[in-house]
Image 1 (cartoon, rainbow over the protein chains, first blue to last red):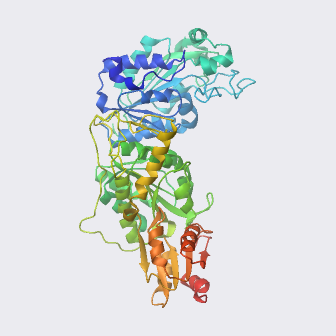
Image 2: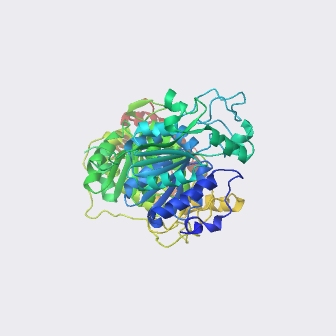
Image 3: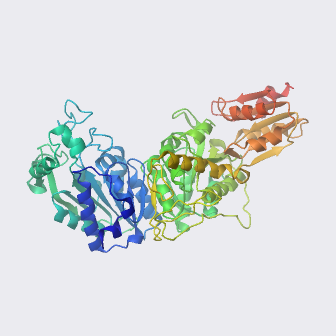
Length: 263
Length: 364
């Protein structure tokens, strides 16, 4: 499949900033989607609000850009009303960890058959760089000018605990692993969650001495550690970055009966 | 059967095949009834984590092709406003039942009120169109539920069944026509990449249902006829004005009122549960007429104008501190009728005929 078979050429160029990780995610997704061979006309793309949510506006398929945080609830309605459709959600840390947190844990618990790709850039990018539920402890943002006093959510561990069938987290540096996880997520029955740690030099980097995209890529390299070796894993599974680390890898793969299928 | 039960059966007759909701008194019987009935009809019932999720799931189901609905009451209706605005902006057919109870806030969970009339019209942000119907009997709960679906499908606008605790819980008979008239949205299944929201003189775009290869893009952002986000002045203005215009040119079809002795010297205007007392008061009385609003939004002002022409006095009876009252005052005022009064009641009980008599009986 050519790139512009999947994306809307008439909407190009896209709106993302230089150095943003979303382009890499779209690229990986294009390859994963092609490899899986999913029927584009039977696939619906759903998103909420934020930079990551703009992806669905570029996908050449049925797509719905919903309100902030509600993507998973809308996706649930779509899948239940027509189980023949494949449902793919692009979302961000604002949608998933904050305003739509309740929808996130309940969608994972219900295990509705859908694939959720969450681009975690640790910040509210579209509104200009406010603190998020995944902003690392002590990091700066426009609303934490004295440093973040809160510890972040670990979205992937949350998905595991809430009941998702497949959970993985990678950074945009891990393109091969990310593609493989995206493919697995799309093929998995039930709720799949792939979190992608992604650079936002414009909003996150600028406030944290990483205004150059290269610096953010280096930071992701330094802080990402395989899950089984990470300090976070050793200390407290729910406390991402407590050791200044982002644990990456596949978190879980299991086969709980998806919603509506009584085992 | 209860009014809420009539709503359940009507939903099935109207073709509803998806319900998402969150339990709340006094609407819960609708959820319980559909939890039982929908699976029998091949439909889907789901209890979501809150009313925000419920309304969102309804929108998703509607785009996947199902006639979809939810039911709630005041506190839940407040939470749904976000997605009601989204449904209006994206022209998503759906039905929302609001069984009104006493407010504000948690208020009187089990007792009646009519304080959500203005919220039904203006509860979400921005200029958006809406249809709201007000049932005044168990039979109405059936008929207007079907009508709510039909209007929503026809004009692609979220439609609110503005019921109340009394009408929902009132027991009575209702009859079902041999053939219930049902309207389904007009679909399109061609590739709609560049004109997913194109419309004809009806101003209602045909519906490119998901999963048929339409490849439509839907967004709550201001959008052009392709469905693509656009922030140009003309695009936004065209969109917002058309959304209103598509109802404005079909008011004759949308607006309904019921009248008894129209153009009498004295007229009562009411809706929902107080109309029972008003009916009793008016029965057999000389010189007093009754108007029961069945459509509340868009406000049926042309019909009202015709029904009160020549009347000297108009009294509005409603279970709030005056909401429809101001609409009636405006319409009557334009006709030169300045004697418009309000019989207002809050507290959770319906108006009694004796209260209407006391407020209206002596005056002339």
